[in-house]
Every structure is written in structure tokens, then in C-alpha cells.
Amino acid sequence: MAEQYPEYVSRRLAQARALLQEDDYGQMDAAALCFEVLAHFPELKEAAELVLEAFSDPWLIRDNRKAIGRHVDEWDDRPWQQRRRLALSFRYTSRWEGRYRQYDESSDSDDVMPRDVHDMLEEGRGQLLQDYLLGQSRGSEMAWPIFLELFKRTTKPEVAMLWVGHLYADQGYFAESVDVLEMLLAQFPRSADGRRLWAEVRWWRDYQDRIPWIPPRTSTHGRRYRQMMAQIDPDFAATLDDYDAPFEHIPPNLDKLPDDFELPAPVQEELVARVDEVLAALPEADGWDTAVDWSYLDKLESGDIDTSQFPEWAQYLLLEIDDPQQELFLKQYLLSYLSNPPLFDDGEEDDDKSFGE
Image 1 (tube, one colour):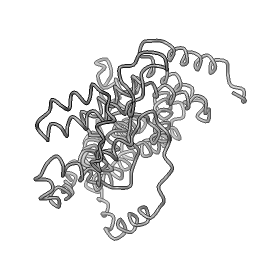
Image 2: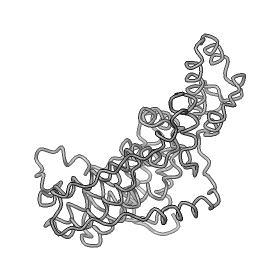
Image 3: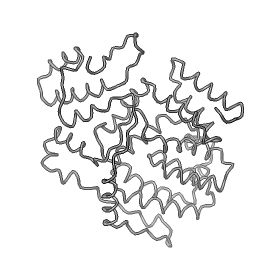
């Protein structure tokens, strides 16, 4: 660290590095120590990069790929599914203690979710879920003005902003979460919970494209998803337009909103189309190297799978499969499994032979 920082900063980072050297799962605790430092020194690149180093542990990568894969297939390249991967990753790794306040029986619920704007908070959350779970962007458009309005009406704006800031982070909207938390800190600069959460979410906003267990973001807008689903489900290929149709937006319950609150007008479809056109014309951003070999997704999509490159044990498994559909699923699994980073350094035993050996 070229710049002089208080001594405790060096101690915290040293503790984090020590945790990474232990055999036990210390990666998330090491990251939490770094976030404590970043809460007070957000420009300290060393702490931010140490979080990324902690998250690059091969065991952690495997575990998170497996856990997230139970919710979202890695070949699902629809935009909101990428956000769900990020949201799940944040939940699995976060050590922010404020997330447990809602389960603390000694805490007043009004200090977690203000009662005077409870209905508005629930309506905003319901709107946001429509985008998070179903890709209905009108939901997130509606949620933002509802939250901004309730900040003006509540007698506990700090509590409300903290709740909303965590909600946005919990659902993978890191930029929006940072905006809300910076509003909070502008009004309540001594909010320890708000500052600590802000540091963590700000890191996720800046590093979300470098999380090693998450496939790179693409501009294909579901092309790979449609291709894979057509292979898996013949009905999908026959009725592609039905599957591609967006879910209908469910508007907020006006009975739960103030009488004088006006719902925002929807974003014009022509404007959305123009923005999409501009974004599609932009060159692809250079991707970051990660420990996972994500090229396996291209092989899945194209169907160009050379099983002779599989380890011998995997080839024997395939010989036992007679059903074409089961064979396809096994190939998908093997490609994903073999794309993982090695668990051991050179010279140590590793059951997972890398692709091509």
C-alpha cells in the first residue's frame, strides 16, 4: 500500500490472507474483513482485489456453480437470469450481519421494515420480483418510483432506505442498491449498517463481470437458451413464439398505495427498441480471464462435442447410455464438470483430468 493507512487496515488484510491459507472454508470471512476495510477506504484497490482472490478458490467455484445451477442453467443467457445468478451469489457469500435483523425476536419489526410504509414496501418488492423472476422489466420500472415516494413519507427514512438497499442487492440490482445506500449515507453518514452494506454492494457492482463461477454476460438475449431448449424439448421448438412471449405485467394494488400517488407512465416501446438497437451495435467488451473454461457453452450450443477429448472414465460412462436424451444430458453434465478449475497444484493428485488430456 503506497498510501498511508491506519495500522488496523494492514492487520485486517493480513487476517484475510491468513484465512485464505487455511484448509477450512474461510473465503467468505476473508471477504467480509475486506469489506470492513472498504467501508472506510473505498478506493483501496488491494482490499477489493483480495475479495476477488478469495472468490477464486476452486472449491468455492465448484460449490457455487452447483448451487446456482439448481436454479438457473448456465446456458440460459436471458438477461434476467444473469441477474438471478448474481443475486444468488451475493446471498451465498454475504456476511453482512444486518441481513439477520428480521429474524431477531428482540428487535422491533418497525426498526427493520417501517410500519408506516409497510404496504408500499411490499408493493415495491412485488413489482421488483416480476422482473427478477420473470424478466418483466415493467416491474422494476414501477418499483423505483414507489420506493422513492415512500422515503418521503416514512418517519424512519434510514430504516426504509436500508431495507430497500438490501432488497435491491438481494435481487441482483447492485447499481440501484448503491444509489439507495448513497442516499442513506448522505442523510445519515453515521449509519454503520448502511456503510458496511454499501461497501459490499459497491464491490459487486464493480466486479459483477468478474465473478469466476458466473458465465460471461452475452448480448445474445436468449439465443443460446432457445437453441438448448429446442434440443431438450421438441414442443418448445414447435411453439417458440409462445415461449418467447413476455409474462404479462401485474400492476400494483392501488389500495396499498397513497391516494395521491401517481403511477409512472410506461417507457415507450419505440424508445426501448432504439436503445436495444444502439446497444446491439456496440462491440463486445473484452472478457476477463476466469478459472472456468466457459467455451464449453459454445460447444453445447453448436452441438460440436468431441467425446474423444473426454477422460477415459467419462467415455466409459457414455458407452453405458442407450437413450439419446439421457446421453445429451450426460454430455452436458460432463462438459460442465470438466470445465472446472483443477483442485490441486501441479504434482498433486486431481481426479478431474482437464479437457483434452
